[in-house]
Length: 526
Image (cartoon, rainbow, N blue to C red):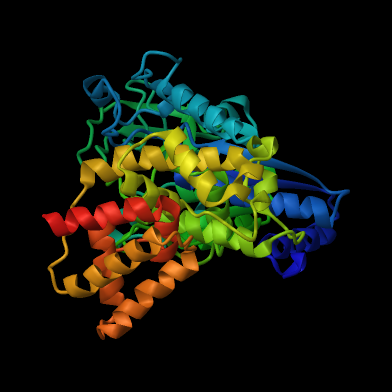
């Protein structure tokens, strides 16, 4: 596959065409962050994917300058209390206020938003992303958004007409693009505009809307300027405002924001701006096909992935087919990592475009693009080795692997990382959720023959390899007319206590025939 056919290069070509039309030589890309919670795997995905595009742009058009803005919507109001944060009672008292006006529940930073923003920067810095952080509060209060806000004010009738077509009739009469920040209680989204004052870009308002009863409005009536942070515009208008004021050329968004995409594109044109080139990615699904939700906690957290699997497997997962929904979850993590390792092995020494090189954290060189392409050892194989020996001993697992496949020593740093991740996965995910699967006795006759054949060959000193062991297992099933899928499931249940596993020949070659015979012998003695 040539570079030009890879999706980041197609996106880079779109950007180049945009620059040619606009007569520009610099690209501003933007990603968004909602600081009401900690950075999560979706945050990583959006920044990583945008980085892939910008790095492809660097290859296609080296003279073009670019900047990635990581924008935090920290002037937004806190609508709910996240379940994973301390001091819930304190936070409840501040519901409805902008996140930069709420105390830090951890007691470490200037505000709730400052804590979350710092976590975002630490998170992005840990991967070596090139970005510029931007705060909504700072942009509003410093006046960066003032020109755009004036245009929204001047075009409010047209904007209202566009917007209210998308909302219920009950809300149309009182809708306004502006949400004043109450000068008495400090809340946002509890205020309602009562008058537009043409002479000085100010609005009269009352703090009277309790927002679905989530928090109280104080009843204050006042007047405030729309400039310098006296008011904020609602989400879809705000997205258009950012595009206008920051001159954004490129932005990604999830499938769930398609409606916002369409409306914000119309709104930015209404105030004299141009929508950026937009790229829709599909959302992640859990093992059952449900959408990933921070509140539910399904899927995989970024911390779990980085603890259980190498970072390059995560980068690759984000890279592959972003416009197709993909399942992720702890139970299928080994398969996800395996598909990546096997792909890298197939590529071998070919020089191909790799998203892995775009993250500086990998500069130490320990990533799968350098693994032995002839004899790849998969995550599942290591995991099933740990299951078989029943010990979370890094050195023991390492020695088994080196004995089974000595060539991994040339990239042992990477395999050490894999082993460590597997051990964490085994102790923290598998053992607490272990459900033993026991065989039902239906294939014991064939199992006994398989055992005796391996034992006889072992006594005779035969040094069986993985393919030979696999062939013995296959021929045993044929001689008893077993259905292959059920037969191998039976072997896994006996040897591993589960119904799936790696190729049985590879697995027995890895743990050694003697240990496999011991396992089978224990089963027959029960």
